[in-house]
Image 1 (tube, rainbow, N blue to C red):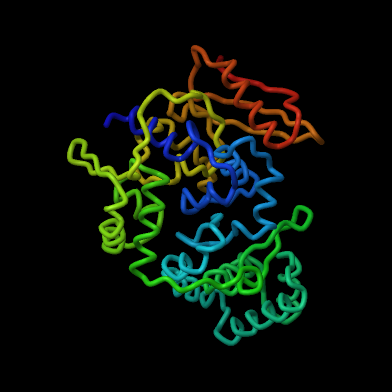
Image 2 (cartoon, helix red, strand yellow):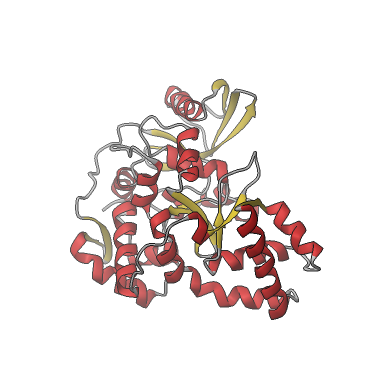
Length: 361
């Protein structure tokens, strides 16, 4: 497969083009998990893969406990299907649990303080059901547990990795936390073998064509266990070889035809980029550093014909949104298609597209 064919297939596999999902839960289920450091952009990452979605529908899926925000893999915030959160945490998050404990100890949060912090948060959430992060931090500070310099954040991260808490719905513009066992009903336990097989099936079905090294990057699994999951899932997958590289994908492979819509304004941290270790099929080497910027903050992306060729920004003004688009190089055409893509985003936000500026057109 050439780069263009890989890009076209991934667009369709991820349901950025072609078939769309009806619900937010279906999108997250298909992809396995959706990266979500930027909450607003993560909502759009889900919405851009749905039929006639708006931001309200995606947030309702959170309130309905169909999708959940937590840190299941790589110590990174993701949306995951509610029914899968526990086996994902056991399979993936437990791998960095001990590292988090060591980090907290370096910050002088010893065992007794961690036990106290856990009890404080557990008691508070049992009483209030859901609480804002800022209020939890105040409780810890009141009991003499420092929260500055990331210490408070690492306490929450540690408790989320252990499966005690997860994020709840927004309260105003503030994120809340809830007790996982109160928020979601328990389901049957999955064995390690079942979890590995299911994760591999989800990943390659929702991201293929992709390699085992892409799967390792995305999941954070050791290569040995990633291969074990792939081997268990291979009856559900198809394999294509190109130049000595093995590409895996779902049993119903996406076609490599020209996308039905050639221009997309994708979310920051979108799975189209961060779902893979090897990204040369979708972005030129010289442009890749422009996407991540300082501190690995991944910007929203302009995609034309499968290739990431620029960035975009939004500015919200009451019920209106202004969008500015910044291609990496002069575009010979595509202005109208960019405007249409911006219109799709404004409709998702239930706002009027009041202004669009496009550089280098």
